[in-house]
Length: 437
Image 1 (tube, helix red, strand yellow):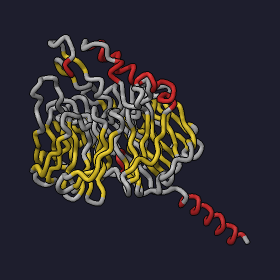
Image 2 (image 1 turned 45 degrees about the vertical axis):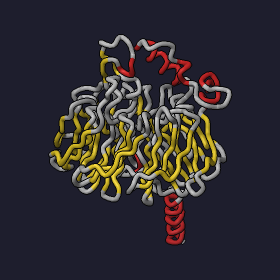
Image 3 (image 1 turned 120 degrees about the horizontal axis):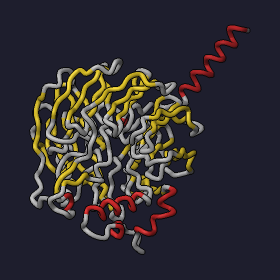
Image 4 (image 1 turned 180 degrees about the vertical axis):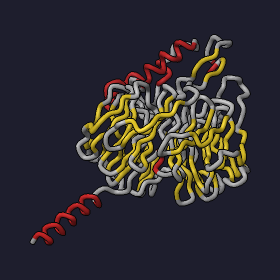
């Protein structure tokens, strides 16, 4: 009887474990950053399973491992949240904004904060394992930014809102920094393995494939580095800004598939480069709109969204021919699209999560954050299109910053959706982490 009882208990345990699908332990789901999740997803919206409130903006994208969700907040804390109940397991106080998305590996959670410190904490308890001090964080800055006055003043960019999200591979953890370096640390000890200096802030997140690290910098170059040594394999120069308003640099994180690196740029292009040589295969023009999102790649297609034009594209991965595009009422999109099953999910600055059926290319459903429901009308025209310029009263830099702060009251979704089983996990600038099913 005791043997049978033990077998029964073990069976129940395995069934319980099997009820949790494939984990999403890092930004974009895997080292290649494909943005594709092995999950059922949510073809039809049913309800908000739960929402967990922080006291700051949730720009970080969550990591999901087993029964726990890990996410950072601009309130200075990294949170571990119970996946079923939506309640706090623990929090780690970095006491500095956390807008990088955590990575989880071998019982440790890795993330960076605006104090210039990179952390590794115990995944089960939140206790600090080690920390590493970079040369310091900062946002991308430039004179006459976005045409703002005074033209001779150097200005930090409010839309440089993400920190680089780490990726763990082969015993090392990789990330970029505002000090201009790409770092590789020993994942167990935090000891520096190598660092590579670029010409400006690095807030894109590294992707790894075939022993190489692929990452862009605000210096307008995209780099391929040896993952073991940090030696440069090649670099690729993206476009310059002819209007001198500093619409340059790489904020998008790359996806690596089919021997090709796909990434967006503020020069209004999505690029496809040969992963081995850095040769340009094609550059898709968005006709003046930034590509901040990290592309999702599946079945020979690339999916990405644009900023000012508010468009979602599906293009052929080999030729860049447009398969279809969908306009999201002109609301800019910074959130990166995620795919599960026949559905694509992406957030927007309207404070909405859009679900698109890829089989028929139609919008299936829309979810609104709490703040979007409360404050969205003030930034929306009667026809439903965006009126976000209403918050920007002049071209003086202080008014730019004030307008950006007003826009955040709409509860934009800058976080990228993560799909595990039949639940979508997404953060909002209203401070909430949402579980949607």
